Amino acid sequence: MINWQSTSRVLVLGYGISSKSVIELLIKKGIRVRLNNQSDLSKDESVIRLKQKGVEVIDGGHPLSVLDGIDWIVKSPIIPYELPLIQEALQQNIPIYTDVELAYQLNQSELIAVTGSNGKTTTVSLIQKILDQGLEGNSYAAGNIGIPAIDVVQKAKAVDQVVMELSSFQLLGIDQLRPHIAVFTNIYEAHLDYHKTRQAYIEAKLNLIRNLTSQDYLVYNADQEELASYFEDCPARKVPFSRKLVIKEGAYCLNGYVYFQDKKIMKLEEIPLPGEHNVENVLAAVAVACIENVNPEIIRTVVMNFEGIAHRIQWVGNYHKADFYNDSKATNPLASLTALRSFKDRDIVYFAGGLDRGNDFQELEEEFKKVKAAYLFGQSAKKIYTHLKVAEVPIIFLADTLEQAFKAFYDYPLEDEVVLFSPACASWDQYPNYEVRGKAFCELVKGYLEEKEKNERN
Image 1: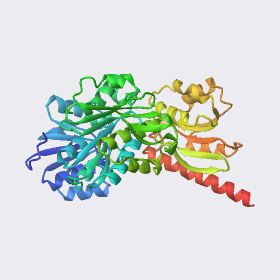
Image 2 (image 1 turned 120 degrees about the vertical axis):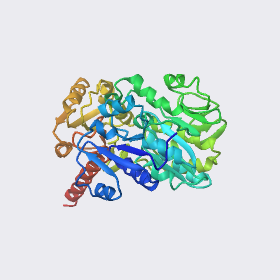
Image 3 (image 1 turned 90 degrees about the vertical axis):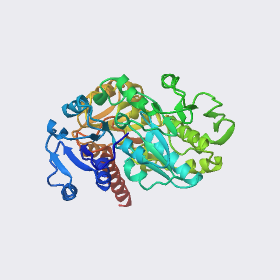
């Protein structure tokens, strides 16, 4: 258990959004805080204010001396455990947490936690909206979805529900965290630049079930036999969902409908989001909602009116019969594979590229066969180009930046294609995050559509 005594001295390692919430919480509890960050924080006004509140700040590197007198550490999830400072802390048996563990130990509400390789944010958002409409109290989304969990649990009451998205990075820093309902959307290979091996990545994800008991529920994707095999010894009550099989103890599809056990929930054609992966996201949310005894008509209504998530196969506009989609959240090839498969009967104009994390794009080659033109940018452009050539894509343009690539696209004779921005790479070679990158694409689309409209008027 975390020692919340005011005599404690805590090291907050890294200064991101969640770290700011952690520091404010610790100050409120009268706990002494030392903030350490790799980059210079001297001109950050929020850090200047923290210093005025008594926070000790050591920036510009990670000297081992920052561990002197420290009782426990709250680490930014993205900071790797290979960092010498972290290795030294482990040698000294200093407990290391991520912010979600602190949030759990403060939380008074029912906790529903969602993890997986893809679909987490959409599933969390669906669950939150359904429970908010169907249960007493309020439901809050939190965690890796971009809302600091610590901020949420401090306002959530006992009658409320907290629906928390958890990444593998966050799950490495938990201790007591135990959701009442744990959800696994799927498991694929991801984040090997951080975890180094597929097995290490999977083990991080499986931390979510470590503390489950027979009083808890485990919702999981039964279409993945590998995933199901990891849960054989878990004592929680298992509630599978499947897009391919009829599983009477969970959520499934049958004759064009979504079911939970024997309850008919809604028509498959009423799901507004494109792609089979979104059917799976809906099935996971339906399973959670039915465990919570939400009225099926409420579930149906919320799903039918769900507009999706920004930067996740987000429709951003159309030009005559062509549609533009922003999938900037696709930071790995698997996510882009999902996006490409979402448009089975449409030709695609494809935008991709970004940080080279050593990914192999070979798995995209089959879907590349329906790409009519590709515009590539960033560090990974040449690697992706190689696989587009294998798929015999007729038009491929390489650029340094997204803006340059989009400018070249102006010459493409657009008809009824899907223009898909699904980078298959992280954004950090040119953008601070995928959100900024996605907004940049949306602005480029806006400018393109305005110019086309102007030209047609003239």
